[in-house]
Every structure is written in structure tokens, then in C-alpha cells.
Image: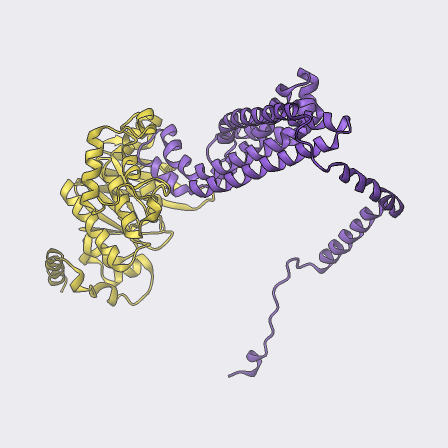
Length: 275
Length: 267
């Protein structure tokens, strides 16, 4: 569904952030992108929806080449890709509802959005999504009144109301506490499953990546150095991605009581497979 | 533990590292300041002579006379308020497109340079020079004052709007762009909420400035309360002048307090 071909990005400063990435993400697959800071993870997902313009190479979404779209075509393509951000990136002075509805901006005209006269179906969908992420009692609160976890839920609702086929998720848990991080990751992976969404999730936390993604891609200095299932992440692989360190704790210790029944079974299955 | 380590001294690194540069700056600045004071030509005799004149001058202000010229004063006040409201509204309306164009993170380079040039030009001339110019161009009266204040508002508001837009949080802006919003939608949903409260505050502040300046542009022929004030001085009616000054102070204070209140409310 999403296909990157020899994607390269060189910034004006001369940094080569991406050195020819080839990657295919099929429909419904949740893929975690791990790697050290500066490896090019953020650049990679921003090249997909062209918040950053790639230097060369192609991005195909359902066989449509995104890299050469004009202004209008790019807007239509962006509607199909929801993005979730590290610091939530909600417009702080707008209400929760306005933030969620801003996900529909690609579908409604200027004056409708200016007067907040969104179609009733959009408003119904917004209420449904807010209920799904557990914020239906916060509709008219301003975004800067919410806690980190609540803000990220609004960010998720904003991305989903676009009715996307692909989620681009940039460090969704980097500013959250460990428990909220898991809840947010669980929510994202559940929603991807419900809606058969493909997702690329940039994430620092290797354990969370292993818990919630079926496929892990390791990025180092703009190149893919690992692509495989979570249980293939051996100490050697992690050393290739991040450098020398004692990796045993990262691989084995998952707090069992925080997992849902299904996740626990999944982990046990993975452990059995790897041992 | 090693004794040498315990006795290592530390000093804050100097702001200017080169001692020659540092001392030549200090000596040069002091010398220039001394010479500048030398040119002012203090004359204590003239200051002493002036004091009793000043006392008489101030004494003639009292008691302020609100009544004798009340209709002229009222006309002047209303003209000034009219001038303030129209020039603030028109000035801000015109400065919004210029402010957008003068924000580096919004406008293409050519537009940016053009709008910055307009802002710089408008800021070069103080209100009083603009008023003199417009009085020469269009004759005496509040129209000249209105034009002067509107033009000054464009420079002031356009510059501050552009700077506020340049300081906005780029991540919030990026998030709205990623939804597939058009440029105009992006402006309304990402840029406007970030700059609006400060812009309302600055608009009220500019209203305040324009009212005070309306008294100044009146003195050079731009109409309004300034013209009334000038007439009062010309006729040596210092008690009426005192009344006008008190009214100006009162109105400025009312605007000051209410704008402070409104600014807190929009935050």
C-alpha cells in the first residue's frame, strides 16, 4: 500500500538524513521504526506526507507517486495519511472539538471551516471518536487544559477523523509516563486493527515497539539495518542499530501485570519462539 | 583526595574576552558620553530665571475651566475619538495583509522584502511628520490626521504581527498542514489561534497610542482635540488648556485600564 523507492534526503546543511530507503508497508500492517536520535526516523515519515520534500526517490501510496504531486494533489493525498506527533501538536488555543474537526479540513471548503459549520456527519464522527478515545466529556475544553495523555488522545482522534489509510506516528510516547505510554500505544494498535490501517510508528522505546508492532525496522544513519519480526531483535541486532551496550534487560523484562490478556499471550508465544 | 583539586579557582568567563577590545570600548564610550554632555550647554542662570515663569505658567492653569469653551472642547474630543477609531480600524485592516507578507515563515522572499520595505518606510516617519505632510497635501482638518494615524498604525501593527507570526510554534502549524488543509484554512486554524490574543492586546494598545497622537497631529493642523488645545494656548486661555489636558489624561487612563482588562480576558 505504501512503497518507498530509493528515497533520499539531503538537507541544505549537507546532512544526508536518508541514504536510499526501500520499504514496502502492506495494508493493515503496524510497523515500528526504531533507531538512535538523528537516524532519520522523523525525516522518513515527514517525507511520506511531504512535510519535508525528499531530494530524490519516490513515495507511492496505492501506486500514486506522491513525490511529484502539485499543491492540490498533495492536499488530497495528505487527507489519506493521518499524522500523530511527539508533543501532540494540538493547536493549544482551540477547543478539543475544533482540534478534532481540523482533521476534516482537507474535505470541507474554506467558509464552512471558517464558521465552524462542519457537515453533521463529521460532527457525529468526531463525537464517536472522542467517545472511543474516552474524551467525550471534554469536548469544549481548550487543548492546553488537558494532560499529556489526554492531548495525545485528541491527536489520535484528529488523525483518525481524516479517515486515513495510513497513520504516520512520530514518537507518540516520548513525552508521556510509562503507563500512559502503554495505554496510548495500545490504543493506536487497537485502532489500526479495527480499521485495517497501515502505520509507521517512530519510537525510541524498544520494549514498546516489540510489544505493539508486528514488524520492526531499524534505522541507522539514514539506512535500514534491520527489518523483521520483534523476536529477531537480538543483542547483536540492537548493537548494530544503536551501538555497544548491555541489551539483555531491554529484551527480556516486560512488566507482565500491565499487559492485557491478549498481549500477555502474544508475549508468551514470542518468548517461546525465541527460546 | 587530591589537594590541588580542592583549591582550583573558578571565575565566570568574561563577556568580551579580548582585553584590548574591552578597555577600548569602555574608554571610548566614556569619552563620547563626556563630550556629549559638554555640548548640552547647561546655564544655571537661565534655569534660575525660568523657574518663576514656570510657576506663573502652572498657576495660570488653575482652576481648570471646563465651561467657557465647553462646546469647542466637546467637538474636539469627539473629532479625536472619531479619528482614533477610524484610523485604528483602517490601519489594522490594511496592516494584516502586510503583516502576513512580512512574516518570513509565511511569505515567499520577494513578497517578504516588499512588505518589510513598506513597514520600514511607514515606521521611519513619526506621526507628526506624516501629519505635517498630509496637512500640506490635503489641507487642514481631521482627514489629514486620520491619514497620518492610519499610516503610522500600518507600520506599527504590521511589524508586530509579522514578528508574532514568526515566533509561532511550528509544530502546531505543521500538524494542521498535514491534515490536507488549504493555505487559507491553515491560516485560520493554525496561525490565527496562536497570534490572536496578542493581536487584540496590541490593537487596543494602538488605539491608546492613536488617541494620544491625535492630540499631537492636531497641533500641526490635523484636527481633533489637538487643534482645540492649540487654540486655547494661542489665546492664552491656560485654564481651558488645563481642562483639555485633564480630559485627555482621563480618557487615556480609561482606555489603559479597560484594555488591560480585555487583554487578561482574551488570554
